[in-house]
Length: 92
Image 1 (tube, one colour):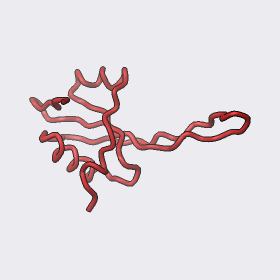
Image 2 (image 1 turned 45 degrees about the horizontal axis):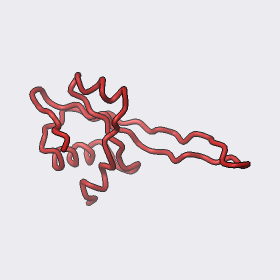
Image 3 (image 1 turned 60 degrees about the horizontal axis):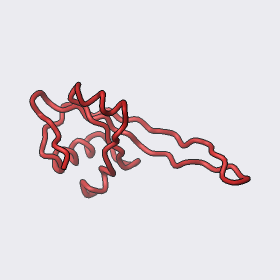
């Protein structure tokens, strides 16, 4: 079994993520191979909260020019975590 800290890579601090905070939802960058059940268990273990729903999406890498050649940014997976009423993630 994977460790909770390898499944959750880091919280996404973006403008959209900040707006979702008022709806009791949080954005995280997670491991590409993790499924929703593993993500839910990892969030509950690390942050000691009750998760009601997990939505995931794959973010495709973009084509970028690096010096004279074309390259790609890496693909990654984003998770939108919905918490139960009254639950809140306390950032340290």
